[in-house]
Amino acid sequence: MSNEFRVMTSGAFTAAYKALMPQLERLTGKTVVTVTTSIGTGDTSIPNRLKRGELTDLVIVADPVLRQFITDGLVQADAATVIARSMIGFAVRAGAPDPQIRTAEDLKRALLAAKAIGYSASESGKYFTGELVQRLGIADQVLPKSRLIGGGERVGAVIARGELDFGFQQISELLPVQGIAHITPLPPELQKVSQFTAGIAKTSSDPALAAKVIAFLASPANAETLRSTGLEPV
Image (tube, rainbow, N blue to C red):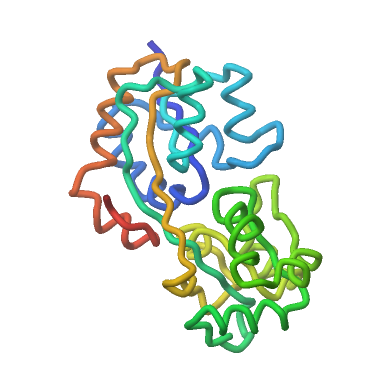
């Protein structure tokens, strides 16, 4: 039996996972190894690592993605459990004024005024490009000046470098980034709440232990940790 417990987690759950890592190591009695935190499409992304058969025990991603992994035979169907909810937010560079976005009209005005907008390769990015700007009626004006941030890099990091003046990602992925400010949820009428689900990889060396970890992550005892990292407990 391996002395490692291997985890692939999307960026949205990464901060909470890292905060809980000492408890995970005590629970498993093993060294917890973070295999990747990138959902994306590159060679090192979670989907491609799983398709290559890389050894891992636990997979934590947005619920529709995990369900697809189950369909594809990459994750076991039993024990899959929703462990957190996540909202989409936006941010600007530190030092920039608060864009004062409280309503859909506020957001529409800010996006039309922005020169460079960033979005992620995960659920928030799919929502931004595939639904949000269409609902606002500004897709033709906004998408040409919008940029996909891939390769596991966070949108906030690109904002902080000054390459973007506006960006979208899950709030839990924006909060840990230095150099950005005014991290704000989307207006309620435009918000999309995603569920994040943990499942046991088909390559797990200890499925029973992985199931125990999933039960721990879903425990009400961890609710405050989830909230402090920008997530909502289920």
